Image (cartoon, rainbow, N blue to C red; front, side, top):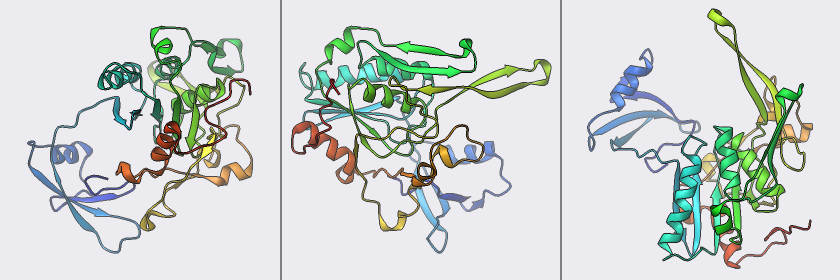
Length: 315
Protein backbone atom coordinates (compact mmCIF):
# COMPACT_ATOMS: atom_id res chain seq x y z
CA UNK A 1 0.00 0.00 0.00
CA UNK A 2 2.84 2.42 0.75
CA UNK A 3 4.01 2.12 -2.87
CA UNK A 4 0.51 2.57 -4.27
CA UNK A 5 -0.14 -1.09 -5.05
CA UNK A 6 -3.02 -3.12 -3.62
CA UNK A 7 -3.84 -6.80 -3.25
CA UNK A 8 -5.30 -8.26 -6.47
CA UNK A 9 -3.62 -5.64 -8.68
CA UNK A 10 -2.33 -7.16 -11.93
CA UNK A 11 1.09 -6.08 -13.17
CA UNK A 12 0.98 -6.18 -16.97
CA UNK A 13 4.20 -4.34 -17.86
CA UNK A 14 7.67 -3.86 -16.36
CA UNK A 15 9.34 -0.67 -17.62
CA UNK A 16 7.09 -0.82 -20.66
CA UNK A 17 7.75 -4.49 -21.48
CA UNK A 18 4.65 -6.76 -21.39
CA UNK A 19 4.91 -9.55 -18.82
CA UNK A 20 2.81 -11.84 -21.02
CA UNK A 21 5.16 -14.58 -22.20
CA UNK A 22 7.86 -13.54 -19.72
CA UNK A 23 9.18 -16.29 -17.43
CA UNK A 24 8.98 -15.87 -13.66
CA UNK A 25 12.78 -15.74 -13.39
CA UNK A 26 12.95 -13.06 -16.08
CA UNK A 27 10.26 -10.97 -14.38
CA UNK A 28 12.02 -11.21 -11.01
CA UNK A 29 15.36 -10.34 -12.61
CA UNK A 30 13.86 -7.24 -14.21
CA UNK A 31 12.31 -6.08 -10.93
CA UNK A 32 15.52 -6.53 -8.99
CA UNK A 33 18.27 -3.99 -9.42
CA UNK A 34 20.54 -1.43 -7.79
CA UNK A 35 19.19 0.09 -4.59
CA UNK A 36 17.84 3.58 -5.21
CA UNK A 37 17.01 3.04 -8.88
CA UNK A 38 13.43 3.13 -10.14
CA UNK A 39 11.22 0.70 -12.01
CA UNK A 40 7.85 1.57 -13.52
CA UNK A 41 5.15 -1.09 -13.40
CA UNK A 42 1.91 -0.86 -15.36
CA UNK A 43 -1.06 -2.02 -13.32
CA UNK A 44 -4.60 -3.16 -14.09
CA UNK A 45 -6.98 -2.73 -11.16
CA UNK A 46 -10.59 -3.87 -10.98
CA UNK A 47 -12.94 -0.90 -10.99
CA UNK A 48 -10.35 1.39 -12.58
CA UNK A 49 -10.97 1.97 -16.28
CA UNK A 50 -7.50 2.08 -17.82
CA UNK A 51 -4.12 0.59 -16.87
CA UNK A 52 -1.93 3.03 -14.96
CA UNK A 53 1.76 3.33 -14.11
CA UNK A 54 3.31 3.16 -10.65
CA UNK A 55 6.98 4.05 -10.19
CA UNK A 56 8.76 2.10 -7.46
CA UNK A 57 12.17 2.79 -5.93
CA UNK A 58 14.28 -0.30 -5.37
CA UNK A 59 15.42 -0.82 -1.81
CA UNK A 60 16.59 -3.48 0.61
CA UNK A 61 13.62 -5.35 2.08
CA UNK A 62 14.44 -6.59 5.59
CA UNK A 63 12.88 -10.00 6.21
CA UNK A 64 11.72 -9.75 9.79
CA UNK A 65 9.40 -12.33 11.27
CA UNK A 66 7.92 -9.78 13.68
CA UNK A 67 7.56 -6.03 13.48
CA UNK A 68 6.78 -4.20 16.68
CA UNK A 69 6.25 -0.73 18.10
CA UNK A 70 5.00 0.95 21.27
CA UNK A 71 1.92 3.17 21.10
CA UNK A 72 0.73 4.95 24.25
CA UNK A 73 2.39 2.39 26.56
CA UNK A 74 0.90 -0.52 24.59
CA UNK A 75 3.21 -2.94 22.80
CA UNK A 76 2.04 -4.01 19.33
CA UNK A 77 3.54 -7.04 17.56
CA UNK A 78 2.75 -7.82 13.94
CA UNK A 79 3.47 -11.43 12.87
CA UNK A 80 3.18 -11.85 9.08
CA UNK A 81 3.64 -15.63 8.92
CA UNK A 82 4.77 -18.54 11.07
CA UNK A 83 8.27 -18.99 9.69
CA UNK A 84 11.15 -20.60 11.57
CA UNK A 85 11.84 -17.22 13.20
CA UNK A 86 8.29 -16.65 14.50
CA UNK A 87 8.83 -17.58 18.15
CA UNK A 88 12.26 -15.97 18.43
CA UNK A 89 10.80 -12.87 16.78
CA UNK A 90 7.98 -12.68 19.33
CA UNK A 91 10.44 -13.17 22.18
CA UNK A 92 12.72 -10.43 20.83
CA UNK A 93 9.72 -8.14 20.31
CA UNK A 94 8.53 -8.52 23.90
CA UNK A 95 12.03 -7.87 25.24
CA UNK A 96 12.39 -4.89 22.88
CA UNK A 97 9.10 -3.40 24.05
CA UNK A 98 10.16 -3.72 27.68
CA UNK A 99 13.59 -2.23 26.92
CA UNK A 100 12.01 0.74 25.13
CA UNK A 101 9.94 1.36 28.27
CA UNK A 102 13.11 1.46 30.42
CA UNK A 103 12.53 -2.00 31.82
CA UNK A 104 8.86 -1.51 32.65
CA UNK A 105 6.15 -3.87 31.45
CA UNK A 106 3.70 -2.38 28.93
CA UNK A 107 0.12 -1.68 29.95
CA UNK A 108 -0.90 -4.29 27.43
CA UNK A 109 0.21 -6.29 24.41
CA UNK A 110 -1.43 -6.66 21.01
CA UNK A 111 -0.59 -9.61 18.76
CA UNK A 112 -1.61 -8.76 15.20
CA UNK A 113 -2.34 -11.92 13.19
CA UNK A 114 -4.44 -10.26 10.50
CA UNK A 115 -3.79 -11.65 7.02
CA UNK A 116 -1.31 -14.13 8.48
CA UNK A 117 -1.85 -17.25 6.32
CA UNK A 118 -0.16 -19.63 8.77
CA UNK A 119 3.01 -21.64 8.37
CA UNK A 120 4.87 -23.98 10.71
CA UNK A 121 2.63 -25.58 13.32
CA UNK A 122 5.51 -26.09 15.78
CA UNK A 123 6.13 -22.34 15.68
CA UNK A 124 2.43 -21.69 16.31
CA UNK A 125 2.59 -23.91 19.39
CA UNK A 126 5.70 -22.08 20.63
CA UNK A 127 4.16 -18.65 20.06
CA UNK A 128 1.00 -19.62 21.96
CA UNK A 129 3.17 -21.15 24.70
CA UNK A 130 4.94 -17.79 25.10
CA UNK A 131 1.72 -16.43 26.61
CA UNK A 132 0.54 -19.55 28.46
CA UNK A 133 1.92 -21.39 31.48
CA UNK A 134 -0.29 -24.47 31.33
CA UNK A 135 -3.15 -26.16 29.52
CA UNK A 136 -3.74 -27.41 26.01
CA UNK A 137 -2.77 -25.35 22.98
CA UNK A 138 -4.14 -27.46 20.14
CA UNK A 139 -5.39 -30.96 19.48
CA UNK A 140 -5.22 -32.91 16.23
CA UNK A 141 -7.60 -35.75 15.48
CA UNK A 142 -7.40 -38.21 12.62
CA UNK A 143 -8.83 -41.61 11.87
CA UNK A 144 -6.19 -43.41 13.91
CA UNK A 145 -4.44 -42.81 17.22
CA UNK A 146 -1.18 -42.25 15.36
CA UNK A 147 -2.76 -39.29 13.58
CA UNK A 148 -3.99 -37.71 16.82
CA UNK A 149 -1.97 -35.58 19.21
CA UNK A 150 -2.23 -32.98 21.94
CA UNK A 151 0.16 -30.07 22.46
CA UNK A 152 0.37 -28.49 25.92
CA UNK A 153 1.86 -25.27 27.23
CA UNK A 154 4.87 -25.40 29.55
CA UNK A 155 5.76 -22.76 32.15
CA UNK A 156 8.85 -20.72 31.39
CA UNK A 157 10.48 -17.40 32.20
CA UNK A 158 8.79 -15.51 29.36
CA UNK A 159 5.18 -16.35 30.20
CA UNK A 160 5.87 -15.68 33.89
CA UNK A 161 7.26 -12.26 32.97
CA UNK A 162 4.15 -11.17 31.06
CA UNK A 163 1.54 -13.28 32.89
CA UNK A 164 -0.37 -10.24 34.17
CA UNK A 165 -0.04 -8.11 31.04
CA UNK A 166 -3.40 -7.84 29.22
CA UNK A 167 -3.33 -9.37 25.74
CA UNK A 168 -5.46 -8.71 22.65
CA UNK A 169 -5.15 -10.70 19.41
CA UNK A 170 -6.27 -9.14 16.11
CA UNK A 171 -7.70 -11.50 13.48
CA UNK A 172 -9.55 -11.18 10.18
CA UNK A 173 -10.56 -13.23 7.15
CA UNK A 174 -6.93 -13.62 6.12
CA UNK A 175 -5.91 -15.24 9.43
CA UNK A 176 -5.58 -18.94 8.67
CA UNK A 177 -4.18 -22.26 9.87
CA UNK A 178 -1.37 -21.62 12.39
CA UNK A 179 -2.85 -18.18 13.12
CA UNK A 180 -6.13 -19.83 14.07
CA UNK A 181 -4.32 -22.32 16.30
CA UNK A 182 -2.75 -19.47 18.28
CA UNK A 183 -5.91 -17.35 18.38
CA UNK A 184 -8.10 -20.30 19.39
CA UNK A 185 -5.72 -21.41 22.15
CA UNK A 186 -5.38 -17.95 23.70
CA UNK A 187 -9.14 -17.41 23.46
CA UNK A 188 -10.09 -20.76 25.00
CA UNK A 189 -7.53 -20.46 27.79
CA UNK A 190 -8.91 -16.98 28.62
CA UNK A 191 -5.47 -15.45 28.12
CA UNK A 192 -6.49 -13.06 25.35
CA UNK A 193 -9.49 -11.31 23.85
CA UNK A 194 -9.85 -11.57 20.08
CA UNK A 195 -10.78 -8.41 18.17
CA UNK A 196 -11.60 -8.16 14.46
CA UNK A 197 -13.58 -10.45 12.16
CA UNK A 198 -13.99 -14.21 11.67
CA UNK A 199 -10.87 -16.06 10.57
CA UNK A 200 -10.48 -18.14 7.39
CA UNK A 201 -11.22 -21.63 8.73
CA UNK A 202 -8.20 -23.66 7.58
CA UNK A 203 -8.12 -26.39 10.21
CA UNK A 204 -6.93 -29.50 8.41
CA UNK A 205 -3.64 -31.38 8.73
CA UNK A 206 -1.84 -32.46 5.55
CA UNK A 207 0.67 -35.29 5.33
CA UNK A 208 3.09 -36.16 2.54
CA UNK A 209 2.98 -39.82 1.50
CA UNK A 210 6.02 -40.96 -0.46
CA UNK A 211 5.35 -42.83 -3.70
CA UNK A 212 8.98 -43.75 -4.19
CA UNK A 213 10.53 -42.82 -7.50
CA UNK A 214 7.13 -41.80 -8.82
CA UNK A 215 6.82 -38.80 -6.47
CA UNK A 216 4.62 -38.13 -3.47
CA UNK A 217 0.99 -37.58 -2.55
CA UNK A 218 -0.29 -34.89 -0.20
CA UNK A 219 -3.46 -35.87 1.64
CA UNK A 220 -5.51 -34.56 4.55
CA UNK A 221 -5.09 -36.84 7.56
CA UNK A 222 -6.50 -34.94 10.55
CA UNK A 223 -8.19 -31.79 11.79
CA UNK A 224 -7.18 -29.15 14.30
CA UNK A 225 -9.27 -28.54 17.42
CA UNK A 226 -8.98 -25.76 19.98
CA UNK A 227 -8.57 -26.63 23.68
CA UNK A 228 -12.36 -26.43 24.19
CA UNK A 229 -12.89 -28.98 21.41
CA UNK A 230 -13.94 -26.56 18.67
CA UNK A 231 -13.08 -27.61 15.14
CA UNK A 232 -11.30 -24.86 13.23
CA UNK A 233 -11.98 -26.46 9.84
CA UNK A 234 -14.45 -24.45 7.72
CA UNK A 235 -15.83 -22.65 10.80
CA UNK A 236 -12.88 -20.46 11.66
CA UNK A 237 -12.42 -18.55 14.91
CA UNK A 238 -14.98 -15.95 15.86
CA UNK A 239 -13.62 -12.83 17.60
CA UNK A 240 -14.85 -11.93 21.08
CA UNK A 241 -15.38 -8.38 19.85
CA UNK A 242 -16.32 -7.84 16.20
CA UNK A 243 -14.84 -4.62 14.83
CA UNK A 244 -14.96 -3.68 11.14
CA UNK A 245 -12.47 -1.51 9.31
CA UNK A 246 -13.64 1.54 7.37
CA UNK A 247 -13.06 0.22 3.85
CA UNK A 248 -12.39 2.86 1.15
CA UNK A 249 -15.21 3.20 -1.36
CA UNK A 250 -13.10 1.91 -4.26
CA UNK A 251 -12.38 -1.32 -2.36
CA UNK A 252 -15.85 -1.98 -0.96
CA UNK A 253 -17.11 -5.36 -2.10
CA UNK A 254 -13.56 -6.48 -2.90
CA UNK A 255 -12.28 -6.65 0.66
CA UNK A 256 -14.20 -9.81 1.58
CA UNK A 257 -12.86 -13.36 1.50
CA UNK A 258 -15.37 -16.20 1.56
CA UNK A 259 -13.22 -18.51 3.66
CA UNK A 260 -12.54 -22.24 3.69
CA UNK A 261 -16.21 -23.26 4.05
CA UNK A 262 -17.10 -22.10 0.54
CA UNK A 263 -14.10 -23.64 -1.24
CA UNK A 264 -14.77 -26.55 -3.57
CA UNK A 265 -13.72 -29.86 -2.04
CA UNK A 266 -13.24 -28.57 1.50
CA UNK A 267 -13.68 -31.20 4.19
CA UNK A 268 -16.18 -30.90 7.00
CA UNK A 269 -17.70 -27.48 6.93
CA UNK A 270 -20.13 -25.36 8.78
CA UNK A 271 -23.60 -24.15 7.94
CA UNK A 272 -24.59 -22.39 4.76
CA UNK A 273 -24.64 -19.15 6.73
CA UNK A 274 -21.00 -19.66 7.66
CA UNK A 275 -20.11 -20.55 4.09
CA UNK A 276 -21.50 -17.33 2.70
CA UNK A 277 -20.82 -14.88 5.53
CA UNK A 278 -17.23 -14.04 4.55
CA UNK A 279 -14.85 -11.80 6.43
CA UNK A 280 -12.93 -8.68 5.51
CA UNK A 281 -9.19 -8.78 4.86
CA UNK A 282 -8.70 -5.01 4.57
CA UNK A 283 -6.05 -3.48 6.82
CA UNK A 284 -5.15 0.19 6.17
CA UNK A 285 -1.47 1.00 5.72
CA UNK A 286 -1.89 4.16 7.81
CA UNK A 287 -2.03 3.18 11.50
CA UNK A 288 -4.07 6.26 12.34
CA UNK A 289 -6.86 4.87 10.12
CA UNK A 290 -6.69 1.32 11.52
CA UNK A 291 -10.00 1.01 13.37
CA UNK A 292 -9.34 -2.46 14.78
CA UNK A 293 -5.86 -1.64 16.06
CA UNK A 294 -6.86 1.68 17.59
CA UNK A 295 -9.90 0.11 19.25
CA UNK A 296 -7.65 -2.54 20.80
CA UNK A 297 -5.23 0.10 22.08
CA UNK A 298 -8.07 2.16 23.57
CA UNK A 299 -9.54 -0.98 25.16
CA UNK A 300 -6.27 -1.66 26.97
CA UNK A 301 -5.96 1.97 28.05
CA UNK A 302 -9.55 2.06 29.33
CA UNK A 303 -10.77 4.59 26.76
CA UNK A 304 -13.12 1.90 25.43
CA UNK A 305 -14.97 -0.69 27.49
CA UNK A 306 -16.46 -4.04 26.60
CA UNK A 307 -17.80 -6.88 28.79
CA UNK A 308 -15.47 -9.31 26.98
CA UNK A 309 -12.34 -7.47 28.15
CA UNK A 310 -10.50 -8.51 30.17
CA UNK A 311 -11.43 -12.20 29.74
CA UNK A 312 -13.02 -13.88 32.75
CA UNK A 313 -11.10 -17.09 33.59
CA UNK A 314 -14.18 -18.43 35.42
CA UNK A 315 -16.40 -18.41 32.34
